[in-house]
Image 1 (cartoon, rainbow, N blue to C red):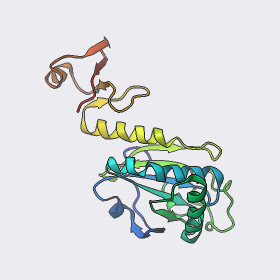
Image 2 (tube, helix red, strand yellow):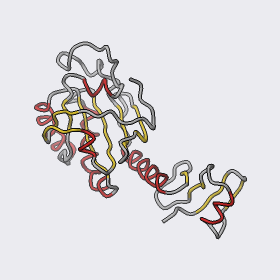
Image 3 (tube, rainbow, N blue to C red):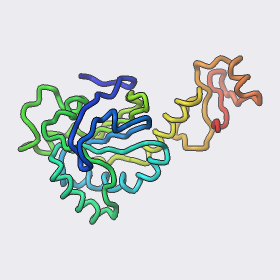
Image 4 (cartoon, helix red, strand yellow):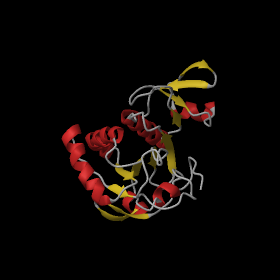
Length: 219
């Protein structure tokens, strides 16, 4: 099953370090970040899980939950969590999905559907493509997807920036320019005609080109 932005995030039930969940019910009426890992006790992922634990208050402030996935049992996740707290200074404070049967990895197109067997005996290299980030909205639709190689740690400050942009543009008819950060100028969406834009922005806008209409970020 190939997933694209705008598709419904596939629902599933799974065991996690915080008990069994139904994914859509767990998301509730807020946002969610699902990020995956090829194996427990891997070095790059250890740093990522610790950093996400540090970021959790900022993510929660945006009405968003964090959930991790690794292709190993929950019992291994709990042991790995001790290493993460010891080495990164932050205890894992969000659920980690145990995906021993590879069900969720396949459901989210991180591994081919025909991949045989389960997690046992598989190496991180076997699961190299299980390095994805999904941002999911309250409507359970996929809003963004990112995929990284195993050797490159993910920039979760960028994921937070991306979440800010997606939430802003879901509420207002604007787009965010390159390297935009919270509070900076935005672009009036191309779908908004000038007549409608004048009603929304009576003070006008900067337009170095007719199609590039720049305004302060809406409150």
